[in-house]
Length: 161
Length: 161
DNA sequence: GTTTGCGTTCGAGCGCGCTCGAAGGCCTAG
DNA sequence: CTAGGCCTTCGAGCGCGCTCGAACGCAAAC
Image 1 (cartoon, chains in turn green, red, orange, cyan):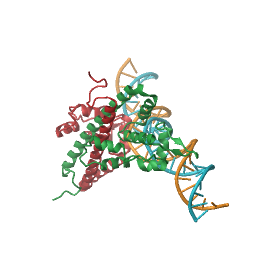
Image 2 (cartoon, each protein chain N blue to C red):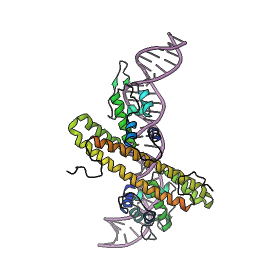
Image 3 (tube, rainbow over the protein chains, first blue to last red):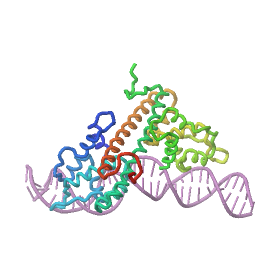
Image 4 (spheres, each protein chain N blue to C red):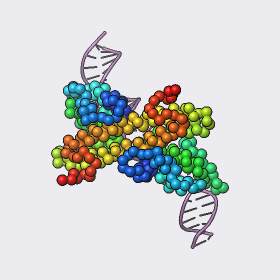
């Protein structure tokens, strides 16, 4: 997935403790100054997506992007912010469908806030559940590792001593 | 995915604290008595997979299953145990390819234990990383929820009071 | 003035993990 | 004897999220 690299960066901004602070998230939301960003190539670079994928997102109705005199896409700061949000949601496993629905609500105006909220609450549950699943699987793998004589900790493949 | 239901069950066997014990995993590994289980229908029911999927796994080389006089599949306890293992690994995100490779190693004999171990160690890292990613995404979603006036806790959609 | 380079649209293709349908065999019950 | 039900194999199809190629356009650089 094209988005893997983006998450890499996000993780790199944290320590390895896996306990992100609100500040870290915030920083992730606003990567420095958003240039009144322009070309598709720049945005692709910024987000770690391909230009192809950005066009695909647009086709899917997830963003609307203006054109210049040559018919080239011009991404303004709002579009970039929305793409950052979209990317983060995609990484958390929210399907394109649901994301498109959510975006539709946003564009429909303030009166959709309750529905947006309930969508987010549902997604929060999905993420929490997935974390629990993975925690369970992790324990299973660790158990198997110990039966093979591996160490329980996170050290390298060759057990020391 | 057909396997969703299996993980539902697994999670149901735990509390909601998401901190599985080795015992819970062990219980998950051995769901009561394994009948010297027989038909594909029974195994499908047991694992929460479809018969189609079980045949697919077999085609993919993940299990070998004996036949009876009519050419019908007969799953013995070993096969069922392996399927339980496979299912758990699949749920943790291990791709079929890698799983097939691992199974190949198992079938190749004891001398492949080191490679198996290193495969498991790598997979452990993958799971841990994914958990960190999701934790990060969760924080982002919670932040968004608070901006919409939702509560930070896990309560129902309608905030109380 | 042509080459380079980035952009455009459209639509096909891919990798994954199933999922399903067709066509048929064997067994048992009524 | 026939109908139902569960099994078999083979191979096609699907949903997702990209990913890519073809064919073309404009525009600044040499």
